[in-house]
Image (cartoon, rainbow, N blue to C red; front, side, top):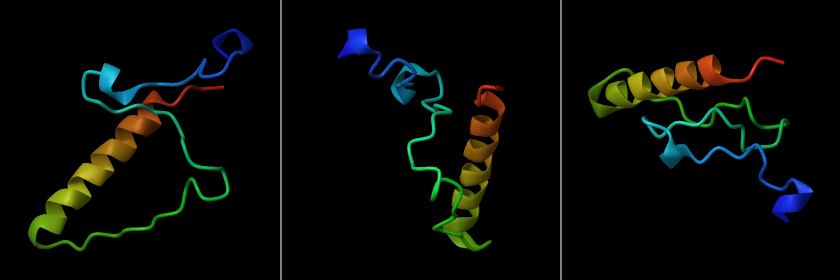
Length: 65
C-alpha cells in the first residue's frame, strides 16, 4: 500500500513536539463546523483557551498551496 502512496501525507500527532498535527481528518463538508462551544466560566473557560490555541496552531501549520 505504501508504494501506492497511501498515507504519504499522514501526520502522526505524537511525533510532533506538542502532539498537534495540522492534518484535516474530517470530510470538507463538515470540517469547519463547530460542535462544541464552551462557556466562559469554570473549567470550560480553560477548555475554550485550549481550543483557541489548537485552532491557531493548526492554522499556522497548514500548508500553503
